[in-house]
Image (tube, rainbow, N blue to C red; front, side, top):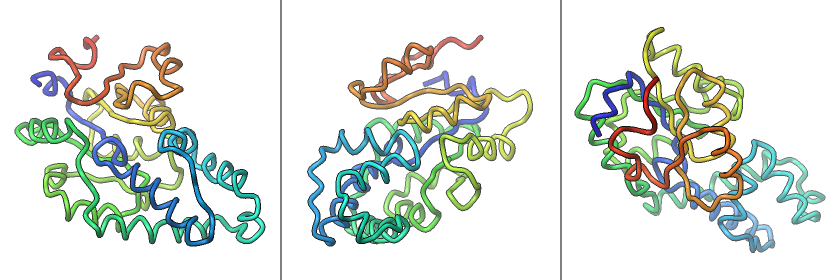
Length: 230
């Protein structure tokens, strides 16, 4: 992975890119709904289609799936708080793992002086719980969490915050995402965007037509890097 030294700052999403928490979020929504008497029969892929396209898409689709739920509890923040409780319970059950390929990437980066930063929509308390379980995450020195910025992805504020803090004007920056809304946030910055996700997501072909590099995992990135530096 000598190509990593071509960059001075690495930016990483967190959920679904470094750790398998996307599956835990899905299960947490199922548990929250089950406690209220509803059965979410969506597949994980169906959940991702809603969750990955914007901050309000999942809310709209769940309320459409369960109209009675909206009548009983129209305040989404109440439901989201219940879902967060379920998610934290899943994390406490030690269900969190690194995504395949992440360990090799983080160990390589740990042997260099390259700056690296996680940029996530997850709040600090949830991030701290996960970092306690996965010590290798401590090799990433900088973390931008949901409390550090105002506008969620796909707004670029979170990535711009990281770039302003940790990059010099002439630094080469590379960023990694696994969702379309995260990718849009990266594309609005000067970082080189790279998509790491399953090759069967429905929106992938549209993104690839834009010239974005895509790999199934970090292990699939070629020796010369995501694509030649210009």
